[in-house]
Each structure stands twice: as C-alpha cells, then as structure tokens.
Length: 124
Image (cartoon, rainbow, N blue to C red):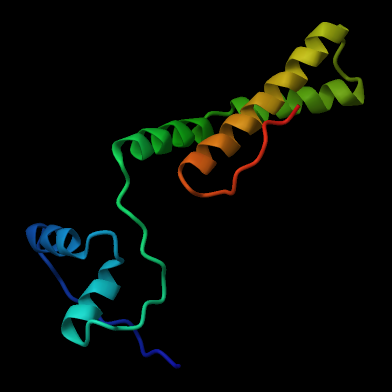
C-alpha cells in the first residue's frame, strides 16, 4: 500500500496530553486513525505498554551506563593489555577483563529487563 505524505495537526500541550492519555500505550497516529476512520485501523507498529516505575528506573540506569565512557575506557584498556602496550601484572589484567565482562552483562541484563533483548546467561 502506498502512503501519501504525512498529515500534520497543531495541538496545545493540554490537547496533546489528553490524546496521549486516551491512546494509552498505542502510538498517537494509530489512535487518531482508529478514532477518526475505524476502530480496526491498520497498525504499523506494535503497541508497547506504558513503562512501569521499575522500568523507568531501569531505563535511567541504562541511559547513565550508555552516557558514561566506562565501558569504552575499559575496552581500550583491555585492548592495550592484549596488545602488550601496557605493563600490567596478571591479576590486574584479569580484573580489567572481568570488569569489561561485568559491564557487558549489566547492559544486557538491563536491556532484558526493559524487554529489549531475549534472556541470556551472564558471561563467565
């Protein structure tokens, strides 16, 4: 099905908030089409449930982890360690490698908790 150019409508903040409340977890365009055209309007995207308080907290944690350079810094240190450009003892090398694995596990687990990934085991 060929779609025409988007249709635009200007709303006040209150009007938009009201529409979003009525739409629940549905995309706003889907809700508006359902009300205006037909309750069985074609849905192009899956409906997502509204975030629960725990999910919002998990999303904040994941965002903070993504904004920090810790994972990247650990990866650079591990890479330098593997290339032999850092003079580190074996224990520090193991600690750095484990830190990288832990960060990867935290990221995967947080995304899993938010429903973005399928379940996986913690890396060994």
